[in-house]
Length: 358
Image (cartoon, rainbow, N blue to C red):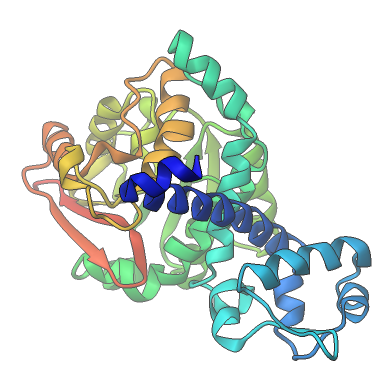
């Protein structure tokens, strides 16, 4: 193999890249472990840890911590003083890997590698039968999605996302009716309900697990103006009942995305606003070449978004259905115009704003 690579420099270069891919994939898994065990958070509190002290401070087994540190040191994530046998998480690395760094904690996103990997066998089978893979095949999906949404949606909801719709914040202070479709565990609604006590908030999601979590957190926070419904967002039971409908990273996964958008249009009152977040990508592959996160987004799409839609009998739009198709479908639902924005805190998503005519 080495002789072949030497004769063909391009092959040698690609072989080197594949080795880097293997290393980076392994590091992604170990960074996920570091996040889940809170090792990064503990390490960031000071420098110069021994493996024993770190394990004790984190409440973990020293042997596992020591092996994890081996991956972190050789991967360039953690620095190591060999003479003193001490480990340090550099401050500039902590700024990307700790909970205190949110919404810039990339360790949250690393969890998707293991979540998606757990469903790999089922997805491989789906390559043969084409019927997709159900949500039940993805362990921890709702937990990780809630963490991801906390960073991309909740952290910037009041300061960045709401201002995309002029006058919306003032209306929320006065008191309006808001619906969040595919609301998950309800973090966005809870944030809005606390900030705008005069408005009324409803969340709907098909997942009993997510709705149960939403009810629990809402009760713990004593939010009387927020409620949650388990139901199919393609069959919204409301007509002209809401002034604002939000859909955060939700439409492309649906079994009936066109119907969902039409039901959203019908659920809005005249002058009502659709505020939708969805993946930052284009409909045509050639337009996504060079997008830094495109390989990750296509992987998410193939291993989850497209597959869960197909499993439910849907079209399998996938995460990379793209801005062009999204705009086309929003207009087809009845909205005469769609504005598309990006936000500096969120490199993964577009934001779509559409208003129902009065």
